[in-house]
Length: 155
Image (cartoon, rainbow, N blue to C red; front, side, top):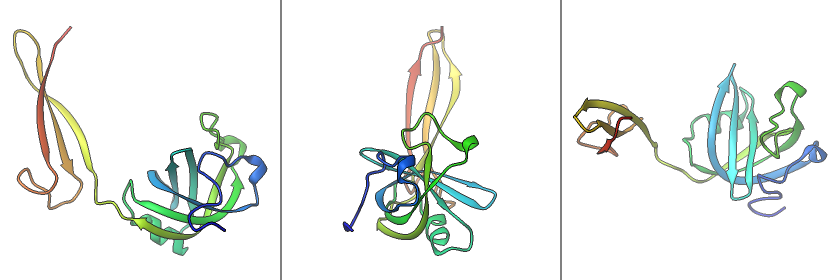
């Protein structure tokens, strides 16, 4: 098997169910639903949903990683239930049950974006976009905070 992938994230289909695969990509999105971890893994070709069950080494490894971390995963392609198929994704009929995880490049905590309106003028509304880090030690004078203001017209 290739060091980083056997398939791209955009090519898995229902015909691949039961296949052992190796995928590499960025952690695009993460959802923890009832203790089961669902992760969207993204590469240049598409997105594949990963599944990690509690009590597994894969769950422990993936649960601690932040978005945009680059990983290589080994797992088995399984079919999603009919009610869980995502028709908006080419890979929406399948998901990969993760067995092994290797971190290829860890990402620091990403800033989260929030916007708020701070006042108005005769010609428009001022709004401020703030980037604030998810780290609890982050303050306005340290870490990754970036503040910028822009003027947006009211209609």
